[in-house]
Length: 367
Image (cartoon, rainbow, N blue to C red; front, side, top):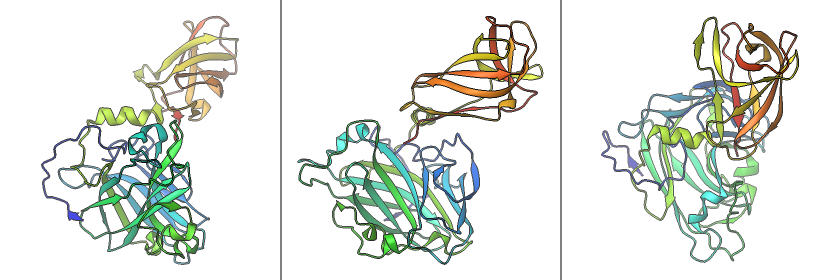
């Protein structure tokens, strides 16, 4: 490992980094979420929290402007807000990023000519800890883990994982499914820590060998964990962290999640970027188009129905009482907005907000 430079002179290695949002610059869902206790995507795009058996521990996950100078202004921060010093066997905390198999074919995993993979990242914590970094092959249930240490200063770790030639039977699927997870183990019960760490070579999954030797992030409410500059690339050498234009990162993130909001103030309402037709006096139908095509048919959620309103013809805005997604694909969705009355069948409609509320449509195609 090497300490983070005070002012890095970075030369981009364009396209080498397979991690999306490794600089922790994009957080469409929220900048901070408290009392995290279950699996999910909460703040920074593409970064998922995995939780095992229900734990008493709680954490706050946030995007924080405390990155190492010359690498990123931002980092991902985890703050232990409720400790758990009695760890059940099935408990764990894993911070992960998941990868589509079709984006991993350059690794050549599971066949002759398979390549090494090097992961580098900048990390610090509130104290000295030992945590684990795991590559987990979801297609074939194979894994390998390496330990790393934290200090209270930013440190860059460079960890090389061996090639997994296997017997030719465990390549990554060439599709849009979840083939590989890059996983930071921050806590684990005996189910995952009771064996011998599998560190030398890839092996079929044995739960007890996945995280022996790690400390517990939930040991004290004083515990914090900071991460940024995450890079995964082919070969045995860690290159300088790839400095990617934030607009490029944002578009990559939108393949997996998009949050569509208002266009700005229009009188006492805010315009929303969708138009359609009234099907009846109570139902307005709107076709929504995504900013960029998403990975798969998405899950679509909205803020409360009454945060939206429908306008038909030259009429006034009518508050929405329910929202229904009729059908969707990777490019768009057909959505119906129901009101009590006031629409005119066959007339053009547009979607707006109800009395300056702040509605949003979320499009989720995450792995």
